[in-house]
Length: 404
Image (cartoon, rainbow, N blue to C red; front, top):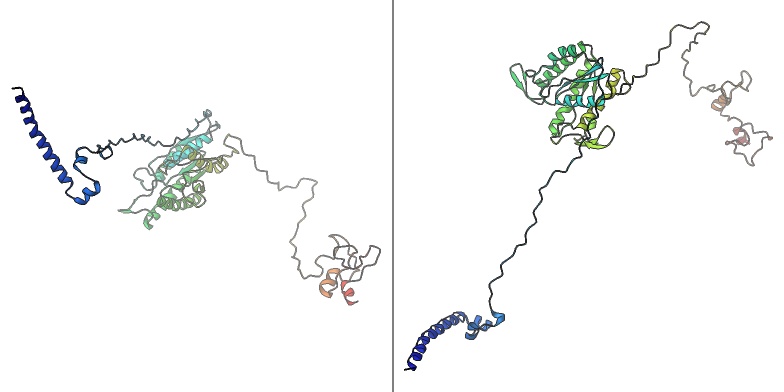
């Protein structure tokens, strides 16, 4: 009775072992399907069921990616902050007015002039510029028409004009729109600049026309060069002076630069990032170009208010009593190089000639007769040997010596 449960346990294990053996046999047959591979790898039922430690297959280790450092966001390089402007001196009630007119570039010129005359209580800079104005859009602001009443109301001692940066656009001429710098456009533009200059000249106010600088866009720079020629002709044709600032904002090759020397020669940034507007140093540099001719108009030696030295008075036409009238000097005929008597011999000016009246002069003997003058002993042209002393009598002439 005790052996029956044991027999059942054995009977239950036999199917399990058979199933395991069948599965192992199938796996071994699959592995040994290729005889060459089985021989090369040394497969066997034992290796399949109980592989060696070196032949065991382990799952691949998970790849660990090291953390990437975070990229710092690029920031624009910090520019040194501009020093604060010194407080301007309080202007006197009778201070003279310097009027600045034009477009947005003229506004920068006015800021530079205001900084230049900050310590002068006798000069007041008045900015009457219109940022978007020009000579093309007279429907927006007509400068030839508006400048007259503006000069009469401000009564300036001098006027500075800077305009043209907004004028690279079509112009309405009659019923047509002309492209910039075409023949019709140029004729109409020159007419408007001349009308503006005549309006300033009619007010009898001295004025300076400041040219426009180069810009970052090459086509705009080329147009500004042509505009400056028009402005110069309009200014000089109306009794004004043209101030050329072009060289201060280009390099040695004539190309646009955004950084260059300031008024003290230190390298600074002159233009904004757009390549059009001026920085504070650029505005001061434009005013620096206009400084000398403006001070001349105002009768000043420096922006601080030092008056210019008076010019020396012209000599009086009246002759004081007791003074002799100056001798009248007539023009003399030019001396001829082949004139035998051109120098009076070898003596200095004013010395009496050694030759007797009527005798040939040393120059005549040299040029006409071919006789050289006597050689002084010890002089650089004394080639006699042995050297002669002062007591010896020199030869009559080199020609005579050659003859001997």
